[in-house]
Length: 469
Image 1 (cartoon, rainbow, N blue to C red):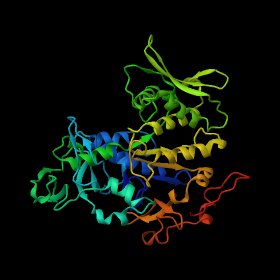
Image 2: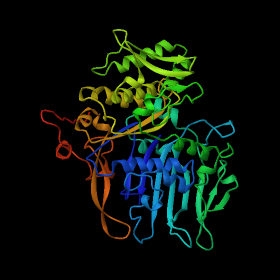
Image 3: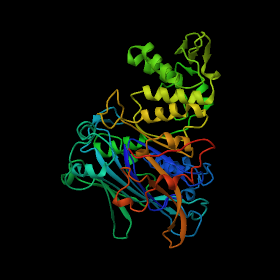
Image 4: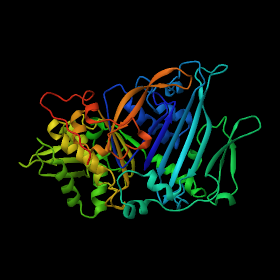
């Protein structure tokens, strides 16, 4: 679970920081840079698994395309300045993880802060595109005694916090950065034994990847747990063409971020549950919440001749509709229903404008569905309460009306001083006055209902109400 994100120098995120709970809705007009938050999260996640340049190539460029030029990621990428990006992520990591060799391990502590600094090296010689350089990387524990001040979202200390936070750490960090005689960064991994463990140092100046991404075994369980947590952060981009595709028997049975393998995933969930009809009935019942969708039942057809799985919706009149015949909005809703049923899906889910393709009459059902995907922080996580976190962004005033104001952040472009001393437009997230994020650290940044209405103008006849519970 990502509990706090700090970014400086990445796209239009300058001195950016945000505290996150189980569910967060970021609202604001188009063009403010809301998606850059997802880009930053995705970039950190990719860096836990791929090389610096591979991660840069998979993140959206300045024009929404994947261009492969690392300068796209810096706020001043195409200027002649010295380019630096800094990231910090505070997170709750899994209490048990599996290494790349199938061995189980437990981290020393589950509450961690990860810090990363990345620079840019201009091309030299025959090179035409520069490269990213690792300037600093640190991983340290957060004292469990500080948890009440760090986790300010509504949760049960006895049920939730006690279940997800455990362990202790004495001595040095798990990953630290120092400088050699020439001022070059040296990054060291420290064993979980703390000061008793022998550090494993490595020069960072030519490192092709982060240190976290290189940890694959249970020898460094806490670093591996941080890696596994960051690997679990995903950005959903559900595509109708992927959702409509039937699955072969040999395909994987885990739905990917585009929605591919929907049928095989639902088939797996149903039979792992032990009562397939009960699972199909729950999904059908949730789908029936959509106005205009006639649902009597749902099933996954398995064609042993063609060896294909296909999702089929059964209408009240008995008509059977395959997934390829359903509307885009219905398919996206169905995919989220399947995710809701899958206890193996944990970690962070980022969703862009979940209201897309949904009829206004069905927004209430969609908002409740994405909220239900997130872990209930009043209860201990488990098979019936998967440890999932959800962040959505929206520009819809109707969605803002439906979301709990405690979970809402308002995005706007703010004028800030850049590292080079110039003034530039940067993204700022503002909580609602009276919500849990409105405290002494956010003094002057909270917004009221009156502040928001001019930016999120509702259509004629609609009413927008916000109140703090």
